[in-house]
Image (cartoon, rainbow, N blue to C red; front, top):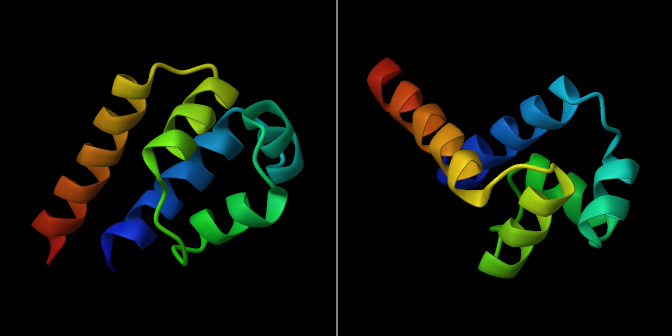
Amino acid sequence: MNHNQIFGKALRRIRREMQLSQEELSFRAEISKSYVSLLELGQRSPTLDSLLKISFGLKMELSYFLIILAEEIRQKNSND
């Protein structure tokens, strides 16, 4: 699993925990629903701009969002 896939998995988990649809997140973050889907599938790398928009859409500090992502990466690396 690469970093984009790990990011996508974390994004999907957080979005679902917040009971948001991809459509609702895309509306809140002002990005397209298809882009949210591609990110969650690990088919796109998020830009800094999109990371900021997503964290705003999730009503979460970017630093906290990145901590969650770092934990996912550490966990994946320790399982390899």
